[in-house]
Length: 108
Ligand SMILES: [Zn+2]
Image 1 (cartoon, rainbow, N blue to C red):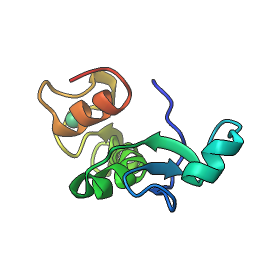
Image 2: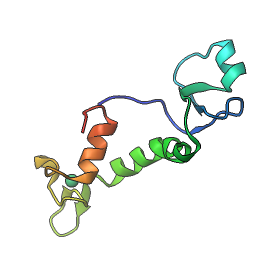
Image 3: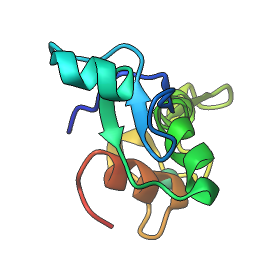
């Protein structure tokens, strides 16, 4: 599993096309703080893409929270998207499983 910089990710107060992490995971250089206002996640972001990039850490955590819901009837973890049991993994083409795999660096 790949790690990512903790959220929240927000628009830089200094550079309008940059997204920064408020709680960065590494020491920041002085210019990074003065130029961007925090740890740079990405820059040259079009306005239409800012919201989904800023939401990425929250979306990831939300998907992880529901990935293997406990089924009251069977007392096992099941994917709410494809219905697969946790021990067998997601069904091919499962949107939730594919999104998490992509977010964790496993490709599409
Ligand atoms: Zn699934």
